[in-house]
Length: 569
Ligand code: ARG
Image (tube, rainbow, N blue to C red; front, side, top):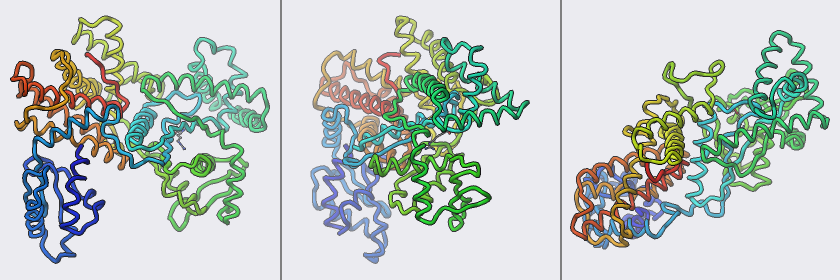
C-alpha cells in the first residue's frame, strides 16, 4: 500500500537530503487533499542545518527529486515548506489492487511487533456484579487495541484480571449460607448471586454486625477453609459463565484469566522485595511506599489489619507479566478514575528498579453520558451492559423488519444482532477514548449518520454490486481511473496500512473508526457519480476492482474493531 510507495521514493530523498531513511519515513505525511499530492515531506527540520528558509529548501529539493525521474512520480511540487509528491495514477491504482489481492486476511498488516509479546488487561469485571456500561468501554476498546496489535505482528495475550478477591467475598459467602436456599441458583445463578449481594449490603446498613461476620468468613477463605473455598469457587464460575455470554456477543475472548486471587502467594515475596529495596515504610500502622518526590500520595501496600490491597496485587501482577510471562509491553484498559492508582503502581515498579516499568501503560478512557430518560436502570444509577445490548438488538430487529422484510426470520435475527451490537461498539470506538461518549439511541442505530450500521451498509452495497456483476473480480485494472471521486477513494484506500499502524501506536481505535467513515463517504460519492455495471468493459472492470478493494478495506477494518460485516441488511 502507501508504505510500499514510500519505500520506493525514500532512497532518492535520503540521497538528496542526507537524512536517514527511517526519519524520512516518519516525516512523510498524507496531505488532507489531493491538490497537495499523495505524499508530502515537511522540510522544516532541515532549515537549521542548511541555514535556509523552508520554502527555499522545498523548492530546491523538489527540483532535484523531479530530475531523478522516479518511475512512480508524476510530478513534484513545492508549496511553502513542503515538497509534494503526485504519483502516477496507473502505478498508484495497480499497487492498491495488488496489495488487496495479495494480502488476503493480512491486508494492511505490518511486522514491526514481530518477536515481541504484548499483554493487554481489559474487561476485567468484579465477580458477582453485573458488567456495567463502563465495562463496555473497557471491553470494546481493549479488544480493538488487541486486534490492532495483531495487525502489527505482536504476539498478543488478552488477559482478564478478574476481581475475585477481597473481604466482599467473605460477606457474600456469609449471605449465601444464610439466604442462598431462598433463591433459585440452578435456574438463575447469576441473578441470584447479585440479589444476595445487594441484599447483604442493604441489611448491613441496618445491622453493621453483618460486616464483622462477613470479615470472619473472609478470614476462613484466606486460610483455605474448604467449605468457604468451594462457595467462592462457585461464585467465580457462575460469574465467568455470565460474562462469557456477554463477551461472546461482543466478539471478545480472553486468552488468560488471572484473577486477583491468583497473586495470593506472590504478595509476600513482593513485599519482601519492596522491603529489600528499602521502599517500605510504616504509616499509622499500615505499610506504604512513599512517593513524595513525585508529588503523589503514598501507595498503600498493606492495611493495618494485615489485608493486602488492590495496588499490592497490581504490583505482583505486573512483575508476573513481565518477568514470568516475559512480555515486552503491558497495557491496562481501565477507566480514567483509576489514573492515580496506575501512576502510583508504575512509579513504585520504577523505584523497585524494574526498567520495564516504562513499558507499562494505562490506556485510560472517559465515561458514558446518556441522554436523559432514554435508558431506564434497574437499580440506582448503574446501567447494565446486558440491558444496552439487548435493547440494541431489539430495536434493530424492528428496523430490519421495515427495511428488509424479504429476509427470512433467521436471517433477520442474525442481522439484528450483527448490526445492533456493531452499532453499540462503533458508537463507542468512534470517539477518542479519553473523551466522554454521548449515548443517543437514534444516532447509535442510524443507517445514515456516522454510525456502525452506516459502515456495515456501505460494505453490503459493495457486496451487492459484486453479486450483480457475477464474474470473478478482475486481477488488473485495465482502465486508469481518473475522475476526482475515483482518485479520492483510491487515495484513501491506500492509507489503510498507515491508519492501522497509527491507531495502534497511539492506542486509539477511533483513528480507524473515523477512517472507515471517510472511506464510506468517498465510496458514496464515487458510486453516486460513476456508473459501474454497463460501462465499457475496461472501465467496468477497473471500477469493479475498486469496489472490491473498498469492500476489503471496510470488512477488514470492521473486523479489527470486532464488528461483524453482514452479507445483507
Ligand atoms: N476489576 C477492576 C474494575 O472493574 C478493573 C481491573 C483492572 N486491571 C487491573 N490490573 N487493575 O474496576
